[in-house]
Image 1 (cartoon, rainbow, N blue to C red):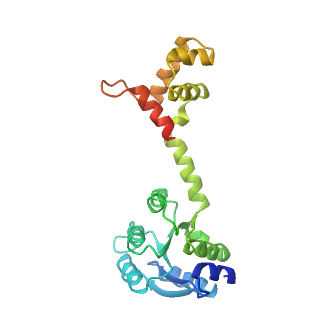
Image 2 (tube, rainbow, N blue to C red; image 1 turned 180 degrees about the vertical axis):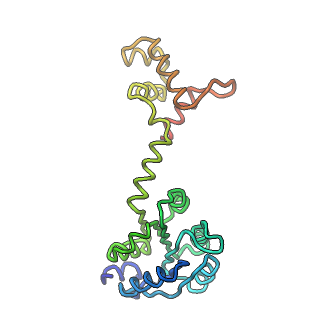
Image 3 (cartoon, rainbow, N blue to C red; image 1 turned 60 degrees about the vertical axis):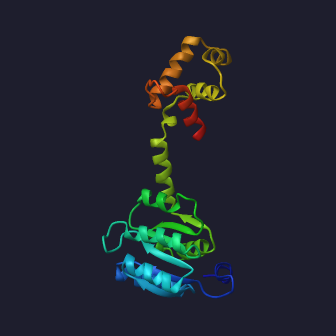
Length: 229
């Protein structure tokens, strides 16, 4: 840990106070050693989610490093504890570690735009300099998301975003619809026939999964999806 990192994180020149929670004793001890050798002060360790919450409330560390899957249920106990920490102790930053890319957990942790959060794959902790940099950035109020997780989230967004199914011409038509243009006006703008515009609009409704309905105006719903994207 650089001196600049210590000053930025602690705000008073003191060592960064960290709590490490992981049910694997070997991994936990290894992580503690890396952090302490990097100049951090590991104030407590925890092996399960309940012990984690108790010790966070008692020690109020600058940062909690938390494994996603922990006892008692060995599912998402660590993540749920991390979310509780964010609610109860806003002054404690949280770095969540995961064995695999579990993008839903990442979304749940960072979905509300919290500052001072991180989500890294455990394989990253072998890069000591990168780990220490992430720890100090998060403790200083920043955020660090594993590059592999970001890539997967972007790929999933593209797969799940129905607008990605639209052709370039259909996007043009939908854009003009968003401006309030009628089919006839769109046809004039694009220099195509009214019939061509009608076919594009029908295709847009189909790709956006907007079947005919008495109470829903599909044109309005299509434009709303376009604007939200």
